[in-house]
Length: 105
Image (cartoon, rainbow, N blue to C red; front, side):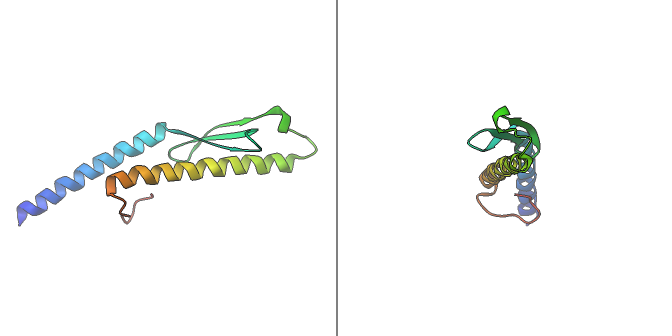
């Protein structure tokens, strides 16, 4: 019976190491979200951290700052949703689609 526990611990360690690899890989992924027909672009990494915002000068209207703010928020939200989906996909490869308690994915 001790050998069975040892085998389980080895599997857990392998999964943990692979999870760390996936998280490192996600940090280097760049996922883009856009709004306003591509006039506002937000780029996040696989950990949903914003790494870049691009705004086309045509969408900058000093008389309508609220619209620009809404476009920025929409682009960021889209990029973060895509990043979450990517993280979920990558973790599903590891867990076989099974949700594990305590994992943020």
